[in-house]
Every structure is written in C-alpha cells, then in structure tokens.
Image (cartoon, rainbow, N blue to C red):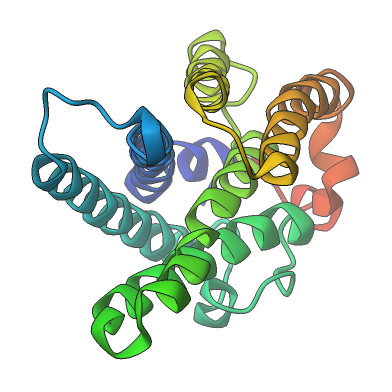
Length: 228
C-alpha cells in the first residue's frame, strides 16, 4: 500500500475525526464543569439540567474517544496493538505523545468506572477521582497537537486555540467569582491557566510546526518504509 493511500485511508480519517471530536467534547465538558461549580453556578438554570448536560457531554466524549482508539489501532500505518490503548508509552509510533493520550484515556475511564460506583464510593472519594477529568484535558490537548498529522493546518491550529481559550477563560471566570478561602487551590488553578498556553505555544513553535518534526518524534523507523 502506498504512502498516499495510507494517509488517505478511511481509518485514518475516522481516527483523526474521532480524536478531534473527542477533544472538542472533552473541552466542552471541562468548561461546563468549571463554570457551573461552586458560587459560579448559573441561577437561571437548575443544577439538574446542568448535571444532565454535563453527563451527556461526558458520555459523548467517551463514545468518540472509543471510536478514535479503535480506528487508530486498526489503521495499518502505525501497527498499534490493543495494549497501547490502556498501557501508556509502549507504542513504536511516537511513544511519548501517544502515551499522553493513553494516560488521558485511562483517567477518563477511571472517572467513568467510579461514576458508576458513586453510591458505594461516597461523594468525597468520587470527587477526588472526578478531578482526573480536568487533568486529562491538557494531556489530550498535547497528545492531539503532537501526534496529529494535520496539526500544521490553520483550521486545526484554530481549533486547538479555541479549546485552549475556552478552558482558560472558564478558569479565570471561576476564579473571579470565587469567594474567600482555598487560596492554595486558586493559586494552583491560576498558575495552570497561565502555564498551559505558554508551554503549548512554545511546544508548537519548536516542535510540530517545525520541518522534520516526525523524525524528532521518534518515527524515523516507520517513515523510512513510507509514512505520512
């Protein structure tokens, strides 16, 4: 099979579409979770409606994430095994950046499992695990930017920028609405909202947007036999 055929295969398009949609949906889920928590919860909309929307967005995220993982494993270009879907950093194709995606998927899976066992775990333990969804978002963002073969396209860059701006805006809005107390938590959130855009911008400028990024991302062996 030629390189062009592999790059334009239905599985490749399905994998990229699934990954992009799952990132967008995860972003919407995180933004909603941040904006509707604590004192910042909107008063015109009931918490039940917000919770229902949040849960549905989470489930849609997992559906498209599953589609992304399955099509990526079935794609003949990268020769990924099923173990890569749950065990991070073991792939031969961009192991570090694929590993970040696997870690993010494992975190979201942990949130799903514990949500199903919420009554048995108790609210405090469930909330502790639920925070993994917020930690999974930057990992998913860097995974998509570093692994995606269309990262250099303007539309994809604007999409990443939109996801980043939405979450950062939600964090700063939540901080502005926050009451007294939990100073350490607010400082951590403010530091993260400042650091992630800076780190991502520097990373894109020095990594995926540079010529020869694929070789630096440890794909030279694959590309020597033909690659995207």
